Amino acid sequence: MSASSDDVPAPQRARSAAGAAADPTAAEWSRRADLAESALVSRNMRRLWGLPGTELGVVGWPAVLRESLFLTWNYWWQAHLIDCAVDAANREPTAARVRRVAALARGHRLRNITGWTNNYYDDMAWLALALQRAEHIRGVTDVRGGLVALEKALTTGWQPQIGALPWRKGADYYNTPANGPAAIALARFGRYTRAAEIADWLDKNLRDSETGLILDGVHLPSDRMERNVFTYCQGVVLGLETELAVHTGESVHVDRVRALVAAVAEHMTDRGVVTGGGGGDGGLFNGILARYLALVALLLPGEDPDRAQIRRQAAAIVTASARAAWDHRLEVEGEPLFGAVWAESAKLPVGTAGAAKFTANGSVTASSTPERDLSVQLSGWLLMEAAYTVTAAGF
Image (cartoon, rainbow, N blue to C red; front, side, top):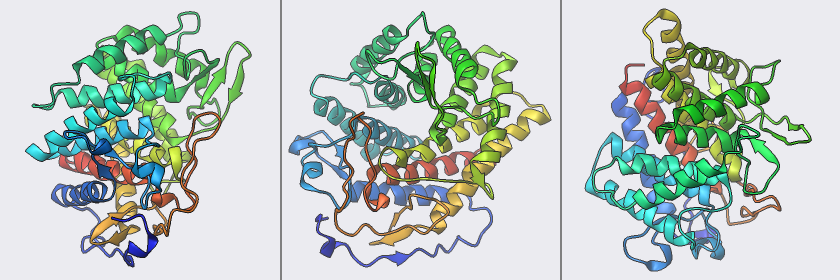
């Protein structure tokens, strides 16, 4: 679709036939995930520079020229686009979906110019997680080199005198957004001891004693804390502790999951729906929390009533959030446009005013209408996939 606002049809406020139903079925969540996928494919996915066998996500819709030409592309957003494409391929495998995963991975490597890695450990961790999952899809065979390079980067980036990885190479800032996904990836590479060391560091240094939530990070050796609390920081720690609970059997990891799910429910939801939201990099934060709450629901081990309750609580946040996001979406040409705040009505991006831009520290600001940002729509898709997985599991 053209980037011109004149080409964007008048939206319709979505009124789902299933919206009044308290409990949409797994089949209904699958249908909604299909529509979320279709919206991203039609609005955002394009060949990289016209090269056959590649795809990449245009980071805004409607797009400005630099976005359409992939002069702006946002490494870690694209990693989550691969992850969402893997979700769809796992949910209902088709040849087109397998090709899309492979094409997105290929597009990512080519657009990164220098290969698979960069200087940011959080970026590389997210890509490692996406490629690990992509590798398990039959027919996606050319990501092994990327996984080797990323495992090496994450392994050598760990600072033994600290017990964690910095945010980026040469930085003095050690934060949850780098260490959470890096440790999950290291666990999935089989490096459970290192992953557990990072989990212990996060729990000791970045868990807020008052709320039980995970803080953003700390500058070392000055010990200056960044006390921002973001949803995706909770998500990655939940994912890490669940991985370790599964693979080590140690109850400390279950205890941490229990406490953190309860803290999220108390401080980061309203009527069971994840609160807050935004665009730019923040557009992905709530979706990441949903992904790892779903992981808790699906994988946290143990059949005793306490652990079953943790799983139910995690799943309930996912499904309540997904119902809210779906009920507050817009429909444009029959496809969903999700809101930046799931419990509020989505807004139609008109034109390209305020197109997301990089800040001095490398983060990406929100567009003036956050719904324009690929990150926000990826969160919506991710949430639909998460709702499907927990519902299909019987929650």
